[in-house]
Image (cartoon, rainbow, N blue to C red):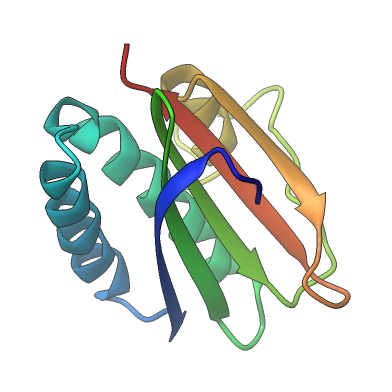
Length: 131
């Protein structure tokens, strides 16, 4: 994170079946407070996809969600202790129950990526511009 961030909200949690719903409410609340309600649908969709990946691929389901207001938009980071990086699917069957999350994230976010840390884990992040 750098000095570009004006305000930050961090939540550490073990992701369960209803966690995404609660995190979406928190995201919506902060985006409204930060005068960026137009980003709510996009950011809520992105954070839902990243939390779904934690549920599916992180054995202990623990993660840290960071929501940061930045100049011109918002950044979301989901960090976990699992060293396995997500892979963007190149071809997903029409009847597949998963595999579209990063494709969807790429479609709605202005930027996204994966970085090392914390520890041996990773941080998956995305940014949405307000302009």
